[in-house]
Image (spheres, helix red, strand yellow):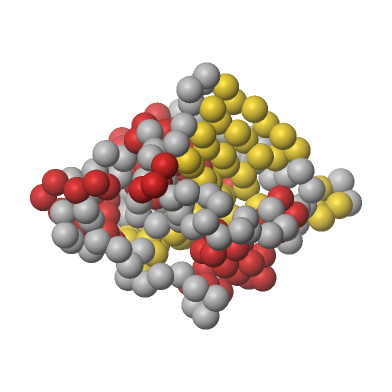
Length: 245
């Protein structure tokens, strides 16, 4: 996974960081990251991971681009309305970084296919917008031993955590998604973005944090949010971290 002269120039600002350097950039080039959803969260995640030089990006999404998506899903543009989101995202990634291999999964993640989809990846990032998918992907990643960065947004609030329930810290197993949320809320109690609204820029904040967590996981740099939940209140611009597990 040596870097070409063009890649050395492209990633120069990473290479001068001692915490990343050539070794970290080679790890990024070798990495396989799966992103669930090419929507509000998946859009900034995919753009930043592509720019960072992640070698292979998988995208799971069965939806098409609609005009109401464009207020927050910055990977898509007006000309792509009506197109498959996975195809639109691949087109955008190719413009950002032609070195990135993109694997498309034009399907909805479910209990039947989740483990097969996450298997073989170094990191999975969940940008889905429903609890059924979040529980599915969390259970699959735990079973397959794959790191998961999960995020959620609603109106002006967002959250991010990193899940490594197959690993230990200080002799204790790290918590799982079900330790944080033992059961989904009753159906109909949490309104969708279409019902409650969502501040478009908030998805960029949360998605960028998810991308940062993935880069740290791949390169082994810094401390990830394992066992910690980051809460973001965009109206008051407050960031709080709570421990769980």
